[in-house]
Length: 326
Image (cartoon, rainbow, N blue to C red):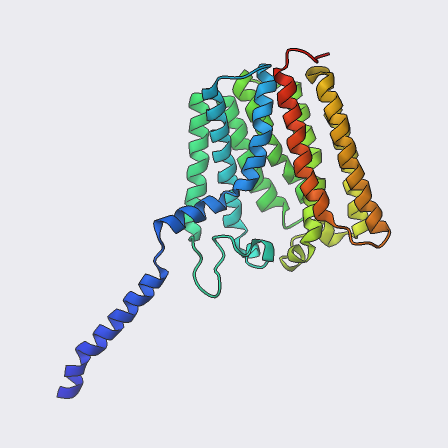
């Protein structure tokens, strides 16, 4: 009994040391938390959204808006998009763990260990970003732009992520509208209203989204199938997917031309040239599939990013030129 009692402090000390060791292994640095939260916002997607916002502001102004307004609008839009993306990661953390493409996201536990970010932390961060966006845009731009940014956030979270993504192959066709709102936000920030050129740009991005995303989904079809997400390439044959990509591509190019009366002939020439570039690749991919050759969908995916970027560069350049308008 005496020997057992005297050994007790050693046992307690060993248990405390082990607990301290486990705690040190799971303790997260501030830098890791910051990097993980930033990754949840999907910054590469935000970059593309901002690429469409700034040229729209230039077009609305027919020149260069104030630097302060540009900064407020871009930061506010980035906060809103980051909020939507973070909440999306929070909701989809179960399927992100199944898909190889998303298995490295901060909310996914790796190697049997703990995730770098806790779900409650991610949700709180996403909500805070959304509130910050609303306040920033509302107070320093106008409340219409803030309301439109909020509409995009709510549409992405509730209509796309919660409502459509896991239920229908039309998920990205309808849900992709959330990514079109930045042009409305940019136009409203400058003019405090929404005019038809902004609606045309909204439609361009709306019809651009399915070919862009379906090309990516073709590459990662097995991932989506494993997660039971009915993206079109999962539930339809490659031939059907390619045909729909071509149809949406033609509608998108035709829609870009609807902006010519407002933007002018220089923009029109750029839209025609860029549209031909996109259509050639879309038809080429369809031809590869019809011929039984590897589809190589990532060629179209990467081209689609370049296409949208150059198209909005053309919008920006022609917006500030004193000539070239119809």
